[in-house]
Amino acid sequence: MILEAALLNVIAGQETQFEKDFATAGQYISAIKGYIKHSLSKCIEQPNQYLLLVEWETLEDHTVSFRQSAQYLEWKKLLHHYYDPFPVVQHYEAVG
Picture 1 (tube, one colour):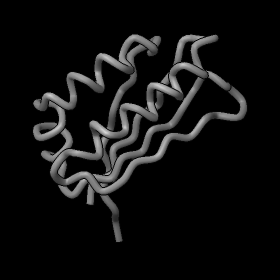
Picture 2 (cartoon, helix red, strand yellow; picture 1 turned 45 degrees about the vertical axis):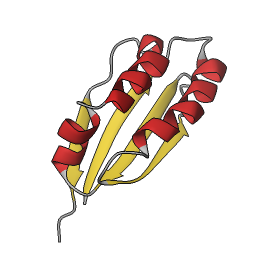
Picture 3 (spheres, helix red, strand yellow; picture 1 turned 60 degrees about the horizontal axis):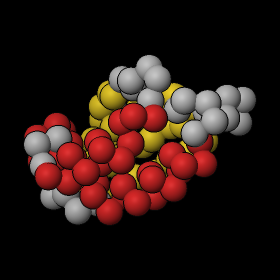
Picture 4 (cartoon, helix red, strand yellow; picture 1 turned 30 degrees about the vertical axis):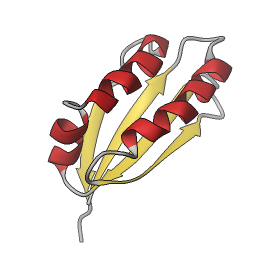
């Protein structure tokens, strides 16, 4: 299992609409082969910052199957204009 983590800085004042659009975008990511689950958490100290965690079966399920899909284009259209700066996405695997 691979854990994708992204710190999302949303343009201040757009948090409510971002959350609505993110709920819609969930249908696109969850349709991808290898998707396990995802969560979005809002930061208490910085209310325009979110932590996105996505579990994938393999790294390629995210980097290839999702990012090269029609669903990713819809995800991108819904969400990418909210970010400033654009998030860095990193991948983790369990140890021990």
